[in-house]
Length: 318
Image (tube, rainbow, N blue to C red):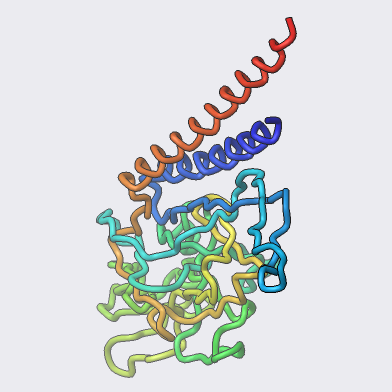
């Protein structure tokens, strides 16, 4: 009977972990860009009471016997995350970006003493961006948004841009002070990730890698040499590790991300004025909660029953 106690305890622990996962999903029902997790179970160990045997009936022996085994409960087999795309939540804020398709925004900070080289980066589906007082395009935690130079070819696999070929997106107000195009108006982010603005002279400008102006409308308009928001293509999104603040980092099983301009190499385009909704399906979570609660309750009931059986054994001698 002690085996049943240990078996039931393993079931309690497994269902408690699953309930923890469900609670986190429900807690993030209104978290932009949240991807739901699920916990799955597996059986863990079996004790062989009797090994199976083949039939010897043809030679005067006995027939075959199936193995006799007693199981020792359940354990959590996996806690995995679904990275399926979810819906568009309108915010009416022009700098909010929704990825319409595959890919992840790349955000980070600069190496000490550098104005271009990124340090460690994070990946995110939440494009809650704005320009700070110094002209840097940042997310809600102040991390810089990474971009690539339009028209350039990366030196990585499949012409992807290496980590060192990413640039922060900014408007260098200090350098542009006194420029005839200033002040800039109607700053917006295009579906291809290009950040542009209309100058005082009526020309539409994008920004180069140092935050200077590049005219992209009018006579002699440039078609390259300016910055666009970069997206990362992750070989195995399920291998990403969640680190909070809607950020992911790569793990050994995620593969090396390939960085490209938005809208290229099968990556999604950007739609502004909204953010990605949470992937939590509240009705599914409540259904899973009921099943998990009943599983926990059943395992707890077994412990009560076994306790009663042990009590009967103790009371045999009185």
